[in-house]
Length: 384
Length: 158
Image (cartoon, rainbow over all chains, first blue to last red; front, top):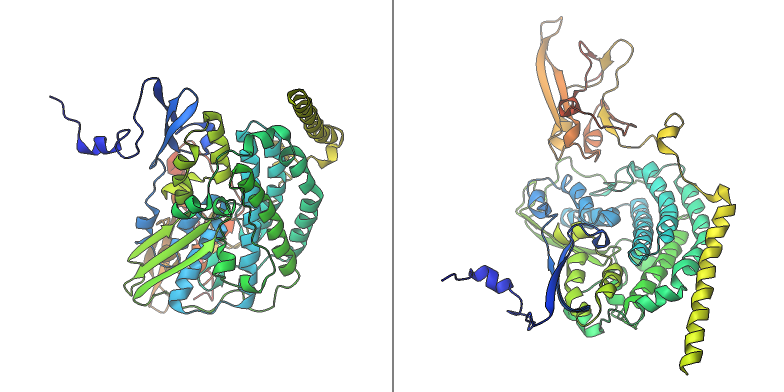
C-alpha cells in the first residue's frame, strides 16, 4: 500500500492548522506568475466558495542564497549584494550593512557622511512608498495612480542617478561613509523635487485616498490586532497601522536620527486603510526630515579613512535600521578574517508575509489583494 | 434608512468619480505637465550624468597609451570575478624587467556596475562609461579586452 512520505504529510492540509479540505472546498494557486503578487510569490489558497479558509505561502522561487554568498565576499564587497534583497530600499539595506561593519571596526563616520546617508535614506523611503502607492492602486484596479506615482519617483531616481551613478541598485554606502561626495547639483535638485512634491501631493488624496470605491475596499479589511502584530513579528507600517510603536529611527536611533524632528506615525484601526494612511503620512515625515537637512549639510570629509583590507575583530555584531517596509537586522559573525563567518539578515518582508494567513482567514478572495498590497511585499526580500 | 443610505452612497460614488475625472481632464488640457520621454527617438539628445555607471572602459590618449600598471587591485576588489588582468614582463632599455598588462579582460555579462573597481584603482586607469545599450546577439561579444592592441603604459605612471 502506498504510504505518504512524512515530509509531504507534514505540509498536508489540516495537519498543523486545524483546516481540513471539506466538501465544496477547493484549492487555487495564486501566483507565482500572477501580476498582483509583484514577483514570484506563490500562495496556495484554500477556498470555500469565495471565502478564504487558509493561505499558504510557498517560497523559494527567487532564492539566491545571498547570506551564503556574503560568506565568500569581503566586508567591502558584500554590501552591493544587499541591494538585491529589498531593491526598492536598496540604500537603506546598504546602510544597515555599512553600520554593522563600522560597529565592528569602531570607525567614526564623519558628520557630512551621516547627513548624506540620512538624506539618501529618506529619499529612498519616499521613492519606495510612491511605488507602493501606485502599484497598490493598480492591484485594486486603478490604472492612473501608477503613472502619477512614477512621475514623482522619476525625479528622485534622477537625483540618485546624478549623485550615486545608478537608479535602483546604487551601492553608494561604503564602510566609513559614502562612495563619492554629493553632486554639485544635488541640493538644487532635491529642492526642486520638494516643490514638485508639494505641488502634486494633493492629487494622491484626490485620486485614491478620498475615493469612495477605494475606501470601501480598504476599511475594515484585513484587520490585525496589536497583539497579533507583535506575536507575528510584524514591523514597519504593517505594525504601526495596528498601533504598535516600532520605528527603529525613534526607538534605537542610528546616525543623526535622534537630533531630527519627526513624528512616528501611528494609526490604531489595524485595518488595511490604517496601514495605507501610515505610509502616506510617513512620506510627509520624510519630507520634513529632508527639509531640515538639505540646507544644513556640514562641510568635511564624506568618508572616514579606513584600511585597504578590512578585518573585523572576532565576535558578532548586530545592527538594525528602519527600511521602507520595517525592521532590517544585519547580524555578522566574524572569526577575525577578511570575510564574515556567517551573515544573517532579518528581513521585514518575511515576517510581514507570515501574518497574511491569519489576516485573510474568513475574508473574501477579492480582499486578499488589498491585504497583500498594504503589507507591501517585496518578494526578493522574503526569499533572499 | 436604507433608501437615504443608498442615495448617499451613489452620490458619494459620483462625486469621487468626477474628482478623479477632473484630474484626467486637467492633464488632457495641460500638455506641458506631461514628462514622457520618447526614448529610442531621443537617443541623439539623451545626456546621462557623468557619474552614471554603464560599463568599465580604459581611456587611452592620442599616442595609444593607458595608465594601467597591472597591479590587479580592480581584480581583487571585484565581487563577481568580472575583471581578469593578464600581465607580462617587459624588458626596459636599462635591461630591467618591468610588469605590464598584456590584456585586461572584462566580462560585461558578469558585471553588476557596482563601481568598486573604479574606487580601488590607484592610478585612475579605468572609469565608467555612460553607455547602457548592452544587448548583443552573441554572448561572446560581451567579453571585452579593455586595453587597445599594442598600447603602452603612459610615461610617469607608477
